[in-house]
Length: 526
Image (cartoon, rainbow, N blue to C red; front, top):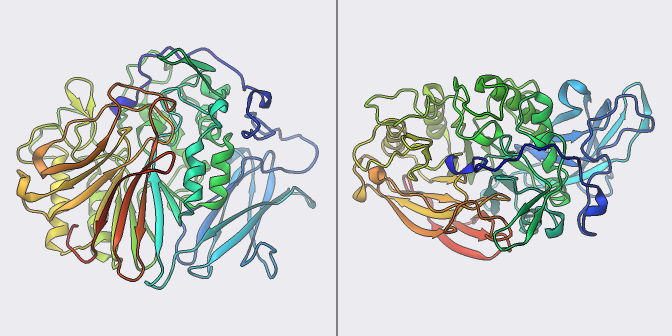
């Protein structure tokens, strides 16, 4: 997003990891710190970076781990914490080629059940030399409609130089979200800020000092594969996030700051901090690291595959995960009368229309890494998202959205709902053809919630092309307010198993509900 740049701050000096002694008693770093694994270490393999599970369905899920050296990954699953009658899954040998990360695919799991799992790492040449198991748990999606579904969403982590602050107990919002006990967490992108270095301290406007845990890789912008890997690894230093990952499965997408602010394919950077200017080179390196650090069904650890996908979560819910980065055209004035490529690319748009038409889920959540009607600028004359501020008939990237909304209306696709993050505040917009210049669609809602731990920014203008009305807004009145000054935000979706009624709640980091909206099932659009 345009607001998410480094904000002119000189964050170039190199720093080293602040030791655990600098952390509060409630905040712990992995004992191995941020160093890359040493292949020649003695002892047994260790999984100090925790575990996580991704893309869970009624009968499957992906389990992730990172070792401190080459190791064979083994996963056991069971119905109870005692691991009686455990089932064993033999995973890969993890090594330097994937930054010592590995994923094991679990299939044939019982639907709608709590699954306990433990991951063991062992010496590839001597299975008797195994480390301590690391445990986690998750729920598979229900196969019966009568069971409730709850999930959370947000995005934007460690942005604008606001990193893991030990004085505040780190990323505290993850502990609040964990207590909500959701079925999964949808991360809407900007999982890292590859273009936003982390300094040891930042002076706040009121004279206070914000302190950061720092690492060598996060002391500069990410350019090499090792630096991108280090940026993803940085967040796992936070104990709250590791504990959250062990309990809550994820559905993860990416956005611009996994690479560089407002990037698009073919771009050549005009940024003096970079020696590598070719965004295609940088994005390929980032995607490889992204695929190593998140368990995603459609990606391979070598960075091949795709981010966009649909995750089926039983009869009540399908989640359509978009990729508005990889296939977009160049940012521009966004006023072209024809635009087949748009922000999704022609192939992804065809896929989305096809899969929405096939879906039989009561609710079809479209996970968008960028907002629809908010005018997100990229400099003075270019635009970053779909809207460009002209309230008239669709132009530029708006043409793809118009085509999709028309498809939803004429195919009578019910229960669509748009969720996004990106803009570093929280809001709710209802789009209605009665207020719009383009009228061939049914009303629908878009909800915005974030950031998780990044700077807060002022509200953006609305574009009237699709008739948005802002029903709720909470945003700071100046740019880049720190998490110590402005609440961080996440959203919550509850779907009632009996009625199918869906409730949206926009929450801030202490759990307080700021806004709620109840939606009824069975309506075209929503």
